[in-house]
Image 1 (tube, rainbow, N blue to C red):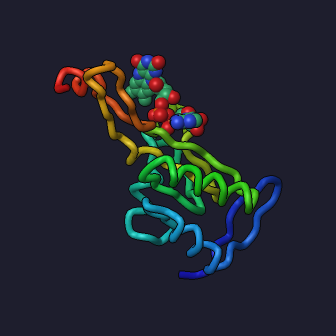
Image 2: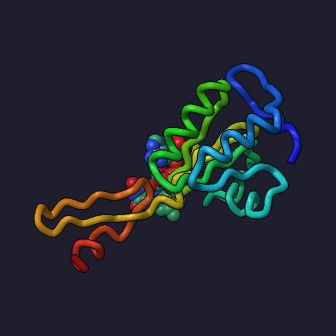
Image 3: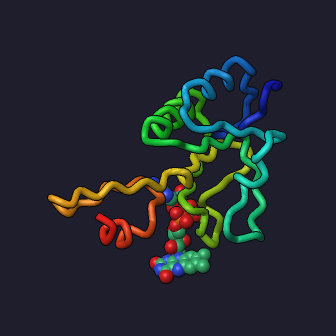
Length: 134
Ligand SMILES: Cc1cc2nc3c(=O)[nH]c(=O)nc-3n(C[C@H](O)[C@H](O)[C@H](O)COP(=O)(O)OP(=O)(O)OC[C@H]3O[C@@H](n4cnc5c(N)ncnc54)[C@H](O)[C@@H]3O)c2cc1C
């Protein structure tokens, strides 16, 4: 892996390999960069006319990864797009050059039958089915 040019607030900068690796090792989920296997699939959004190439895609496994990604972006002043399911027709869930915080792997649902409260991750769906199974 090599150094990576990323878009920051107002300008761009080079992130060194050690810094990028530090981000990667702070995650339970996956960090993807241009050229990585899975990068092109991960950068796609529902509107096929939106063709953006983020510098970093953080595929979050949970809330701790979201925190780590926000912390990393703030430290390096990266512009960020948050991507839920990527259905925004305008493509607000992605960006060029900077960081996408990708919540699409976060689909867990936990239903507490006693309280009838569901705890869901960011992109969970089929919540009614989860209730009916509990
Ligand atoms: C085929 C289709 C059918 C649709 N049908 C309906 C419908 O019936 N009713 C309706 O109301 N809408 C509908 N929409 C619109 C859709 O619900 C909105 O575009 C919605 O924003 C999509 O959510 P997403 O998570 O996929 O968006 P994304 O594209 O992932 O994100 C959209 C915006 O929300 C932000 N965002 C996403 N998740 C978070 C988060 N957890 N925290 C903070 N910001 C976040 C993103 O940064 C971005 O700015 C439809 C869209 C499509 C493409």
